[in-house]
Length: 147
Image 1 (cartoon, rainbow, N blue to C red):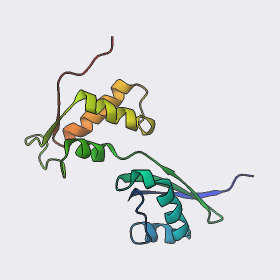
Image 2 (cartoon, rainbow, N blue to C red; image 1 turned 60 degrees about the vertical axis):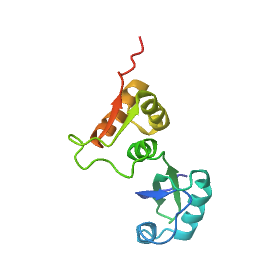
Image 3 (cartoon, rainbow, N blue to C red; image 1 turned 45 degrees about the vertical axis):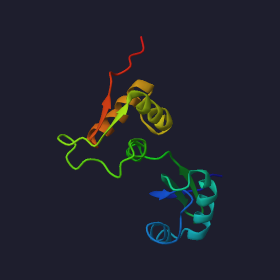
Image 4 (cartoon, rainbow, N blue to C red; image 1 turned 180 degrees about the vertical axis):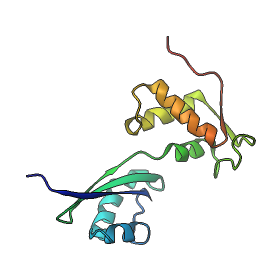
């Protein structure tokens, strides 16, 4: 028989670096979830992505057990990584901080495709380009059209 789902918790944690301190400890402790058990499992599963910010969705059940799904890093984090910037622009409409190519946008879109709500790589690329635009990062060149 299936377990009764009590709720979900969404967190963003650096890969391989989950520990009981905030934000992880208080979020899990208030729901009665074993914090150290989660930290050990999360760190073991994300050793290969150490240091990258990873969204995680934790499903906890009525019997205090849990499951979790680790997603791909946010598009904004990947854009900052590619453009080698510390942060986006404070005034993205006036001050541009970096330039990236459509090839770089495509690699991010392919990586993030499973977490986005779109069906084609072209629509995923426009979503990534929109995030870049709102961060003050210009995408140089012309949008590659597949005919």
